Image 1: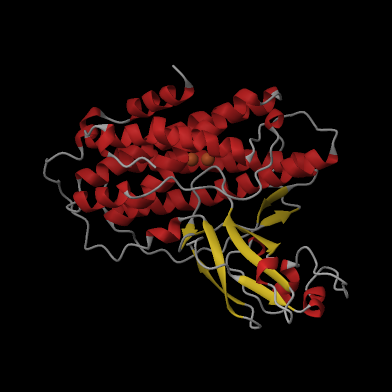
Image 2: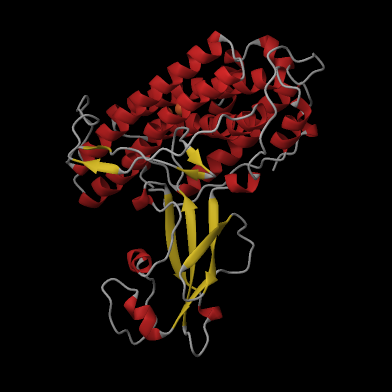
Amino acid sequence: MDIFEQLRQQIRGVLALSLLTSCGDAPGSEPQPSAPPPVSDPGKLHPQRVLHFTELRGYTFEPTSDPRLPNPSLLFSLAEAGQLTDPPGAPTACPPTLSLDALEAQGAILPGRQSKGSYTEYSITPEPALATAETPCAYQIVGNMIPGKGRPLQDQGEVVVAPAQFDHQNWSKPTCDPIFPDDKLVREQLATAWLRDAQVEHSSVAEFSRIVADLIGLGASPELLRDTLLAAQDEIRHAERCFELASFYAEEPLGPAPMALPPHQARSAKELAVRTFIDGCIEETLGALLAQTSAERCEDPILREILANTAFDESQHAGLAWRTLAWILQNSEDKAEILAEIRTIPLPDIHGNGVNLPQWGRLGLADQRSLRSRAWIRVVQPLLAELCGEPLEDLAIG
Ligand SMILES: [Fe+2]
Ligand SMILES: [Fe+2]
């Protein structure tokens, strides 16, 4: 039995058998959810965002989730491009990239840029095909939501995290003693990677708290409320451990600054089901597998133990997500509509610069993508089929 089959069986064990028929014909039980507000555009859930450059010299960007749109370009004269580098200069050729800080200083609005408390990474790359004689320096700007473990708070499709704060003792108390890498670059990469994870884990505490409130609004059972609160407590522990590791590699104490919380509007059964499927049934399932695989390839025994413990917790959270989805389906009049929407949801792709240091417990982007594709077919789709009591070939796999 490989790790995919193991995890699938583990999640099946968490799911109560009575819930495995939730897509059948049994009538929904009380209480019924109130009339749902409009469901957010599923396109907004896609992590990659190509930014439209709508006003050539106005530096205003509109996020859009469709990467097939015409290439959104920044077009500059040589002198203008030179002023948007860091430090500004008078280049003889178009600079290979522009400074995001300089663009922002000129009035560019970059939604969700990490420095503003959200979690989007931007890149600017040359686009010489679009250059003209007047504006020979052409660039494309792309914003990618950075993947991480956990189930972070979101605001209109953007992951929201607390900014990192230095000299923050509360979240970085040393409790373990991993191997200290000799290579400074490796330490920096590990500090950055664990800090990102820490911010996402910390944000997951807020998200689970909101899920509890939503479940209360829908009349959930005490077992579901209790387990969701326990998951929030797990995320506090994960955040502490990740901040501790980030601080260890950075050699300075790191923690979360106060977080700008987006307003919360209670989610309808359908909205909660869709988010539960994406963030829990997909992402926490894949997060568990990523942590497990990272543990197996890690050469530091302390990190290996941390990753294995995280894998166990995340597999429990994945099981909880499937249970939550089953409960919503059982108790909603919109069961067919919810299922129809869930089945159209593709495996979200991941972007960003995943650091590739497997010996230190960090898998690169290529390994993560491969793992996600296999887990999508071997774990997520079979569980969805089982939940619905339908043969796998009836489900769209892609
Ligand atoms: Fe989790
Ligand atoms: Fe977590």
